[in-house]
Length: 451
Ligand SMILES: Cc1cc2nc3c(=O)[nH]c(=O)nc-3n(C[C@H](O)[C@H](O)[C@H](O)COP(=O)(O)OP(=O)(O)OC[C@H]3O[C@@H](n4cnc5c(N)ncnc54)[C@H](O)[C@@H]3O)c2cc1C
Image (cartoon, rainbow, N blue to C red; front, side, top):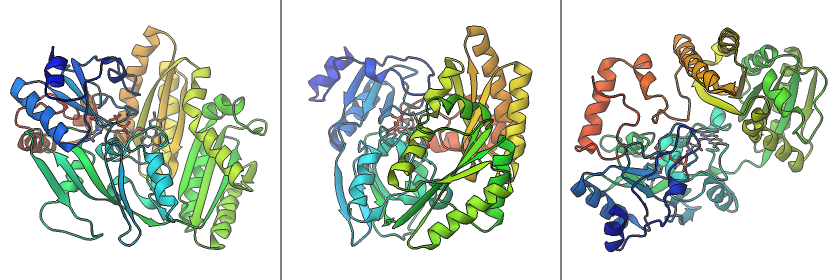
């Protein structure tokens, strides 16, 4: 019915809503009443005006790779997909910016700018599937965030449609600019709850000429975490420093395109980049630090194909873990780097207490760990949820956060009040109301229900 009304407005309405009823969070299936595939900003405006008139929720959607349920139509309504708005409008070498529509797949943008000798560093591991709009809405990170920062650091300006239907243009094309409140940065990370991003101007930097990668094998994850400390203590700043714990290594062993040494209980992937030979010196120094921390073997990739294999192995972890248990709850806490060893220790203790296998891996260099609780039965699922609450609390207790990069969505809204004060949450409710007075844009996400 709603679909027919939207089609009558000249909008492209999906014949089948099933591709739009779930995302990569595993937080359930929520069929919307209709899914609209917007082709330009004016169609986004049309959808939001229609929804306001009818008092129907609208959920913006990029590629649906989100891990916190942000793109789920929990309260029904319209899913507004930006997948058709997928043009790279400009890559300017003179200004070192790219102007893109929100549906551009990240990997396509990376390839386009690298062909011009330029670099867009944000690199969530979902880069082959996720879209720029979703990256901005989640302020996505990734392995290279360690050296280069997250998506936010590369967003100069956006065009966005407010829930009330107005198109706003905020930010600038210049690399600098401080006029007015920084609403661009407020929209980045707002998880589709304040406005729908319909265009973005992104900052580009020169493409590093050299990249060097190593894989170090450790007897256990504590030694790997110690190596992380040693690398930074030596004054090095790799562009990526990814830790894989014992269970992760055991799950990967049969799948990786190379043989792991015997009795391995942890690993680090360390990558340096830059513009000269110093890159290889830095890699060698990181390798020494790994050896000092107890690495049994340190292997440096000899060519691009070997580098790619190391990263393919890293990207296959999620699937490999299903060999231990078919299901998992995957968290992405972040702690100050100095608390990494303690965080891993606490996760292990929580897993033992609940008798659930755990696996930790992730962007250890910036303290961002993906903590996985693995389970089979419905009863174990219940236990996993209880264990997750303890993992999140442990991260907060160690001075960290309940989400390093995946966002709150619906998955963690019940935990936000553990990390943030009542006053801060209340202020965010007022911001939400200023943008979305009728609470129709992605309602119920991020903020817990008002008391
Ligand atoms: C295998 C795998 C690996 C991953 N690795 C990483 C990683 O390393 N780092 C990381 O940060 N994330 C990672 N993710 C999570 C995910 O890919 C990112 O959060 C990504 O940014 C989501 O983009 P998307 O286009 O799929 O967004 P979606 O899932 O479609 O949406 C995510 C949120 O953004 C909102 N949204 C989407 N488009 C717009 C728009 N145009 N305007 C306003 N709001 C919008 C939605 O409403 C929703 O709240 C990974 C996911 C997978 C499956």
